[in-house]
Every structure is written in C-alpha cells, then in structure tokens.
Image 1 (cartoon, rainbow, N blue to C red):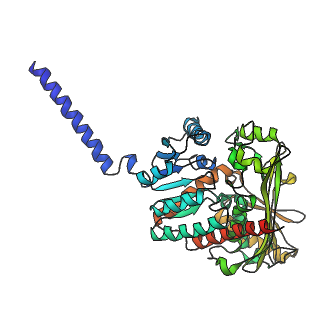
Image 2 (image 1 turned 60 degrees about the vertical axis):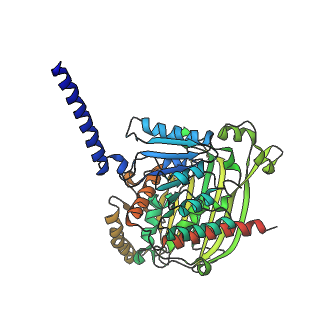
Image 3 (image 1 turned 180 degrees about the vertical axis):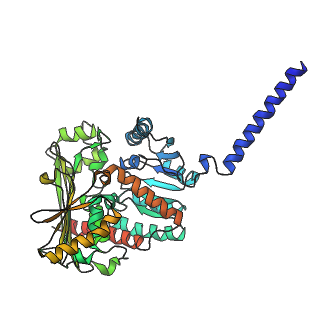
Length: 463
C-alpha cells in the first residue's frame, strides 16, 4: 500500500515539474508563442490575404487571429490556408483563430491579439481600417490600393502621420518590384555606360511607358479563382485607375528615381487621363463569381443585362520633369496558353530597356537592351558594365539579336507572382526589426496614391 502511495506521489511531482519546465521554456522565449510577430488578418476578401500566408516566416507566430464578417469571403480565405497546410510539398502550419461578427473590427482593436494587421479585401473600408489600426498602435501590411479616391488619400496621409507618432510601420504590398525583369530593368538603368541618362520625353513620346493587361477569370494556386461580387463594384474595389495602376506608378517612381524621396506637391504634374469600362455578360459574371444574378449594388452599372466595370485607365504625367504614361486594361479571360501581360520601356540616352510579354516571348516577360549605337566601343562598355549586374544575379547572360540584346534569365529567378508576396512580407519584417522604413518609402507611397487618386478625380470630371 505504501509503495502504491509513493508511486502516486512521485507521478504527481513529475507531472508538476514537467508543467513548470514547460512554462519556464515559454517564459524564456523558447516556445513558439514568444515569436516577435503575430498576424491579425482583417476581413480577408481578396485572395492576396491568403498568398501572404503561402509560406511560413521565422519570426512570425503560427497562430493567426482572424476577424471578419460571416460569409463566403472569409470561408474562401480559410479554405486556401487549409490547402497550404495540407499540401504534400512544404506544407505550412498556420493555426487560424477566427472571430466572425458584425463587430469584428472593434473586437480586433479591443483585443489586440497580434501586432501586424494584414489587410487585403474590400477597398471601400480599407483606408478607414488602416487609419484606426495605426491609431491603435498596430503595424499594418496592406494590399494595394490603400486609397481609392481623393477622400481616401487625405485619410491615408493622416494614417501615415499617426503611424509615425505611434512608432508603427504602414506598408503596402508592391509585389511587382520582385518580378525579375522589373528588378533588372531598374539595375541596368543605374549604369550610365549601358543606359546613359534617363530621357525627359514628351507628351506624345513619353520616356517611360508601363502597360498592364489583366483578366477577371484566372487560375490561382492551380484552381479557378472565384471573385466576390463586390470586386466588380468600383465603389468597393476601386476603378482601374486606382487599382492595378498603383503597381505601375510605383514602378515608375522606383525605377526612375531609386531611393529618392519625392515631393508630391512639386514633383508630379498630371497631363491627361482617361477611363473606360469592360463589359461582362451574365454568363461570364456567373462563371467568375458563382452568382446567378447581379447584386443590388451593381444594378447601377448594368445596361441591357451587360455589366459595365470601369476597370480600364490611362494617365499621362511628368515626374520630376520626366514624361511617363501608365495604362491598365482588364479583359474577362486570357486566350488559352496566355495570361496577364506587362510591357515596359525606359528610354536612355544610350539605350532603351524594354520588357515585352507577348506571343514572341511565349507570354513570359523578357527584358531587352536596344541601342542605336552599334559601335564596338558601346558593345565593349555593355559587356563590362553588365558584369556588375551578373555579380548580383549570377547566371544571367547577354544574348545578341537583330535589335540589340536579350537578357537570358535562369529559371531560379522566375519564381512567379504568388511567391512575391512572401518576398514583400520578408522585406517588411526586416523593416519591423529595424524599427523603420527607408526614408524614401513613406513620401513615395504618398506620392503614388496622390497620382492615382487625382488621376481618377480628373478623369471622372471629364464630360
């Protein structure tokens, strides 16, 4: 009997000791709960919210706190996370703690269960969510666009002021900087022996042009994308002028004036703007949304059963005296074997740097150097200058063609659009560790959203 009592007592002591050791480990930061960053995902209505979590991050807790209204948007997000968690290759291990209710945002602010708010969803409320989050002392990583109209731009400026006051970082997800041809175009423009000087251009012949073609129906992570019905409402998603155009305006700034802080009041001059609608049939709408009817909020845009979505926009402007044109077009679906496309040109005094993504490129972006200087001296200078880029990106090569040179890029650099979200997130986490963004990032985000929202305002004022 005494032996049994002794064993029971010993078992209890060991269990108590094990519990204490576990608590001690967590207190010392060895437990996962002590990782420095913890995500709060708010109203994840866009698939970009899930793409931020397609990878795990060393400094980010695996527990993600989700606050959203009940409905198909949050379900679609959770389904994608579940697929990432259960994929056979390199599965993630996110643990989603979900609260759904009409007071989801107030609940998030009162509980503050994490320190980084991820926003990718309905843009109608996004700027307000951004402002209130930074007011509450929370860092924010937001999908583009962070503002979709002039009133939103004013509130966004207030949010940046609040973020600085509260010592938190507000940052938008600019994935296109990580597409390898965009990266290399910027690198080559920094080399005077290859590019020369960036030309000023004219309104009729801009020095910088960036054009993008997107599609409403596409495949993401191997599955047909189902878009929410509100995505087709410009009051909720934003017009084309302020949506994808955000990426293009960002690339103009980032490529032409790298690491330079821009003053939106003095450095930007809008010259002309225009907008147009993409027409969507009822059957196309059903295919991409799974909805049999147009919701009430879209009836204003329906004419003879066809939905008119103002998703196309073009703006011509000068940035520090350099003439630029950006345009975006949305079609319903890309032809078989194709996809979204991008065209970009930067004109230098010695050469033009051009990204093409058409049939000749098999719909993959390809970067070219085209120069009117056919001399041996220029070719030698090109070969010498290119070595500095090869040091940063081993494996890239110059391939001569009739018009100049094609940059051949190893497959390891072509990681695809979805992987760029992890690259942006990792860069943001570097900034969080440092406690600050590069000095030029905030003024240039302000300049970018000033450009897009003012362009929309001017385009809508046209008769």
